[in-house]
Amino acid sequence: MRIPAVFRLLQTLGELEERHMFNTFNMGVGMTITLPGAQVDRAIALLGEAGVTAYPIGEVVSGGEGVALC
Image (cartoon, rainbow, N blue to C red; front, side, top):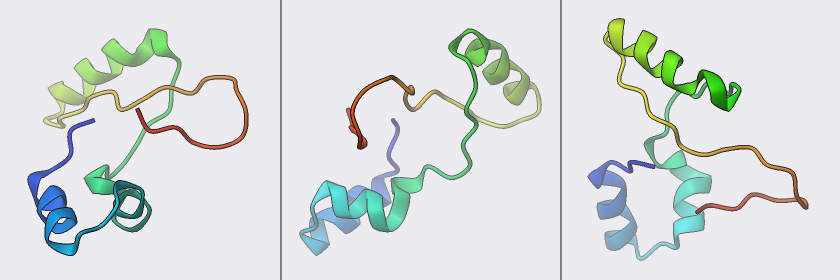
């Protein structure tokens, strides 16, 4: 995931843990789209044609409760 430099600066200056940064600021993620993996490349291409920069930030997988940031 691409994290804007301003969020790393805030984290450093505020001496904040990464989990607090994600909970408070969402680290600049903005709008998200959740779709099947097979559609990712096409969606990114279509958004690019519309002038929107898009990139994958993760995947949904089966598992226990909780969120894992990798």
